[in-house]
Amino acid sequence: MAYKHVIWDWNGTLMDDGWLCVDIMNRFLARRDKPTIDNEFYRQHFQFPVQRYYDALNFDETVDPFKQISHEFIAAYEAQKRECVLYPDAESVLARWHAAGVEQVVLSAYRQPLLVEIIDFYGLNDYFDRLIGLDNIYAEGKTGNALQHVASIPHEPHELLLIGDTVHDYEVANAVGADCVLVSHGHNSRERLEATGAVVVDSLKEVAARIPVAPHE
Image: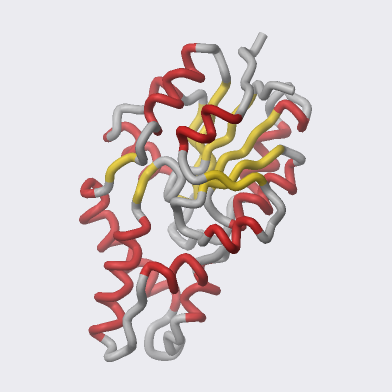
């Protein structure tokens, strides 16, 4: 069955920003005399809601409240986000499916205005029918927005494909009844992704090669 509607995650799926998340957190940890982390730790522990990931880093909520750390993190991230690049083949896959008439949207835990701004920065607006972000910076999850979006489109679940890079993306796909492909180059390790039972690939090129899509009639 070819898919008619593709729901893309953004951070870690189309844009390579995991390294920046590790770098910023290590600065935070070093300033607080806490052990720093490496990419392996990050990919093994990053999760949604993001507060659970912060808990794994043993921040003292009485000293560093989650909301305060979140604001600090986003400020640092926004200052450097344009240093990030798209993953190889990201734009070519989007362009190919757009040219074929396939509907594509972004569903992200990124705050909506920031999501719109960064996609415009990379010049990808024309490829997407809709950009769906959160109304806050706390990255609690995407399930609610996903359910609302799927209820607004005229497609059956088997016509929907969600492409992401985290266990949460698989959870979101399950919630809306969509098929799911997870790319192992992002914010969660391949081991964690494979444990979901979803299809796991190593690159966007592999996504394009393996996934059949069909133009929306």
